[in-house]
Image (tube, rainbow, N blue to C red; front, side):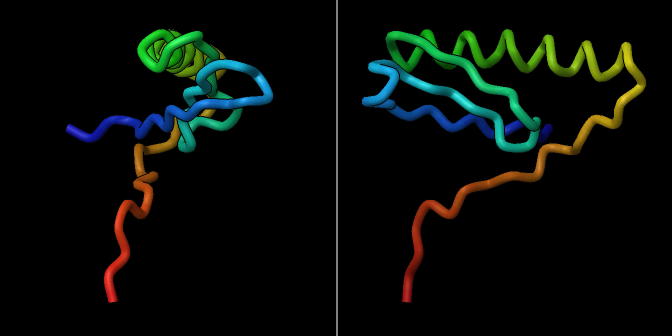
Length: 72
């Protein structure tokens, strides 16, 4: 089963961790630790999907996958 990719990174500007879900526009979260940011992003994802269903908005398929390594 495919699920949405979540990026977690440290933001010096925010002095904490940001977790975002590229396939879901404007779906991101903040945490003081990477785990906290991830947990908050999972809550944000659930809310995003629930709201989209309630409002009849289209829900994108999980497609985003970052380029981790490039060879050649």
